[in-house]
Image 1 (cartoon, one colour):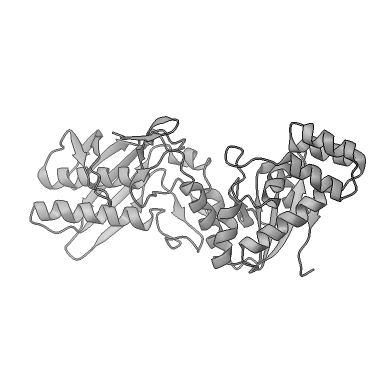
Image 2 (cartoon, one colour):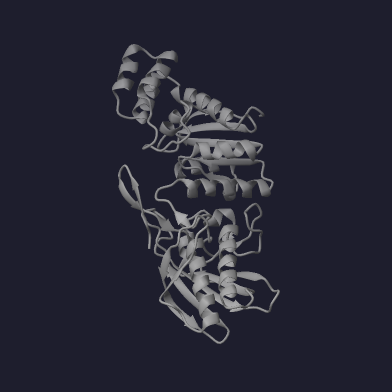
Length: 367
């Protein structure tokens, strides 16, 4: 089902989005509803011309409906929906009714403003909706009839899968979202995570919240929660993508942002790195040694930092020597964050150690 993409590390299989699978199931179900029987497989055409073929799972035809499932293959992407059973049930509606989308088992409902779909609607994004409407029109034209239909999308076990996604925080309840713009999952791409960051910011803005927090992980998030008492949806799951947060805020600003992370990741941000993943940026120990010297550290301390293995070791050495390197990192990282957000938001920068202890901060400009 999935094709291959060659990279420097070898071949990686591309996969199909939940929207692509829902579209394939919709086409197969509507074809069976109009033609009276299911084929063994279904082929759809994606926005960029690809034509994936999907085998069908558990087809069923009733008096006024047809439904069938597709097993999602995410290729080599570490996708929580890989292997999910995605089903479409299609029921004909009177001419002129249009397309009505419904959430079946395991598909979430939108409850907060700021997402591409308004509150009260199934969490089926605009691009998959358009793809499904397209295959309905295609099948209807082939049978010389109208395309008006009710489409119910289900994901078996979707409510459980959703617990491993951002949906609960975004106000999508009861299951996962049906996503995808091209229909293709590119292995290990960052696009899904960054898209979730953007949607989180959109929800915060739509709720009129004036203060949000972007954290690199659960330890820093818990520490910021204790410090500010923000509601859960005010937290942006930044992970390693500081650039994804700051660049989006440049065009979709909030009044105040607390940006928080561990010492190592904030040390990278302080040097201008916007992707904080260990595989894509490294802590510069020599630069940390220079910072320690500028703050009053002696030559022995600088040499120990340069000869060390980790940023946390440098932090511990500076702590023993009474050198406030955490504060220095916070100040430099905040300057980078302000620059990347085009100074459109007020930023507080917090630096923590592995245990969640605050080791450096540079506060808001406005009190």
